[in-house]
Image: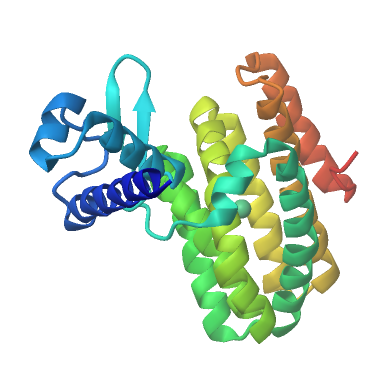
Length: 266
Ligand SMILES: [Zn+2]
C-alpha cells in the first residue's frame, strides 16, 4: 500500500518536472520527447514512473502519444487558456449542435440590440472590419479572414451596449467559436464559394445594424449561424468534399433565402 502511494507521488513529481520544461519553453509545441529510456535516465526515475507521468500530462492534453512515433508536445499551452469546454466540445461532437443552437439565440439577440444601440464609434469599427473581410475574400487570405470574422462578432457584442452580452461573448462565445472556427477555416479553404456566402451573410448583418433595423439584424444573424450549423453537420457526417455544382447550388440557395427573407433553417 505504502509502496504504491510512494510510486504515485514519484510519478506526480516527475510529471511536475516535465511540466516545468513545458512551461519554461524548453519543449515547444510539436517537439518529440526524448526516447523513454534516455529521458528516464536523465530524470533518474524508472521507465514505468516516467510512463505514468507522461500519462498524467497526456490526460491534461499537454502531451500526446502517437502510436509508433513517440510522445509529442501539444499546442495547448501556446493556444493560451486551456478551456475545459473546448475539450468537451472536441470530444463530444454531439453537443456541437447545442453549442450552435445556443449561439443562435444569444447572437441574434445581441445583433438586434446592436442594431438598436450602435453609436457612431461602433459603426466605424464595424465598417472597418467589413472592409477587411471584403479585402480578405478578394485576396484569399483565409487566416486574416477568420480572425476578422471573430472580431466582427465581438464588435457586434460590444455594440449591444449590454454588459451581460459583452461578458458572455468575451467568455463563452469566444471560446466556443475557437472550436467552430476550426471547422469554418476548413470550409473556407475548401471552397471560395463558402467564403463568398459567409461574406454575404456578414454584409446582410452589417446592413441591418447600419440601418438600425433590429429585426433584420436578428434574422440575418440567425441565417448566418444556421448556415454554419448545416455545414458543421455535414462535416460531422464526413461530407467534406462537395462537388462544385452542389456548392454552387448551395450558394444560390443561400442568396435566394436572403432575398426572400426566408430563414435558412430547415
Ligand atoms: Zn461570422
